[in-house]
View 1 (tube, rainbow, N blue to C red):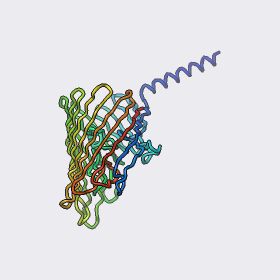
View 2: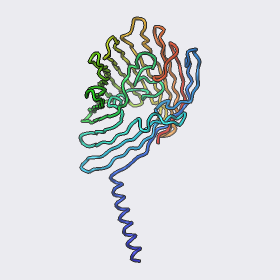
View 3: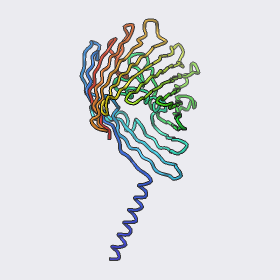
View 4: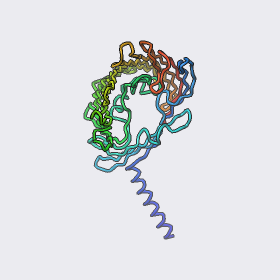
Amino acid sequence: MKKTSLTLAIMALAAAAGGAAHAQSNVQVYGLLDVGVETANNKSATGGSQTSVISGGMNTSRWGLRGTEDLGGGLKAVFNLEGGILMDTGAQDGVLFKRQATVGLEGAFGRVVIGRSFSSVYDTVIAYDPMGFAPYYSWATSGPATGPSKYGFTTAYDNLIKYSGSTGDFKFGANYAAGEQATGAQDSAKYGFTGAYKLGGANLMATWERNNGNTVPATGARDKNTVWHLGVNYEDGPLKLWGVIRDYKLVAGKALTADVDGTTTWAGIAYKTNDVTTLTGAIYHLNVKNVAAGKDADPTMYVARYRYALSKRTDVHVSAAYVKAKNGQLTGLSRDDAGFGTSQHGLTVGMQHRF
């Protein structure tokens, strides 16, 4: 009897200790699964149409682990591991935790994380894309793949140190990604700074990013890629509006190599007709610069999306898009796959579930 009582007492103490520890820390498994079907024309050099099962019509599919530990005094340890999923094949999208692999601290000062993560610019600009950086039919991260450059920004970095903070209605962030080159601290280094301000129903943002290449021995210079954004969104009841301008410039470090320059603008509108239905329209335009006269594609993409919420976690969505280039230049809807014609249209039907 005594041994049984002692055993029960020890088990009770262990349970109490475990409960206290659990109250101070937590780990969450989460994810988003988005799969559908796309049909589009001009999917080959002969103009053929193609129907495909796609992963991520409205959002990139992913899964992850995240958690916090209360360190006391308002300080928390935080971590995040997140990987991509290709829903059409079940394959892993890149390395295991390509999207995020960070650990850091959070407190009254803000949040600092180190590892592989989305850039400060990504964290800010994503709220200013009407399509939400949809893998299909959004050029907010980059333009169409066809051409000398996508004229976009870098969404994530390795070897990253990232800070985010806020004061009142002002949010700000900064990141530094070490180039890890023995040739010098500036070779392959990346920097980013962001700010966003809430003014009534409007939000204003500005970002700046610099990505360095490695020093070219023949010139003593390095590639310098600079990107900035200015944007606004406005929300009034069921209506939401967006407008953004991005300027991209790559100054070449190699001799006799042309710089790359382009300005992307986009605007959008979303209207929630009821608690479960949202209609969205968007226009993206890329002004290609630093190319020979009559060779600038200057493509424009028009997008419309219907979204219906089956529940708080599950949606069905239908998106249609059309893109057209100038001067007989090739373009396409995709920011990853090259276009084979001067125009392209596509339609996606899909389903998304969060857990």
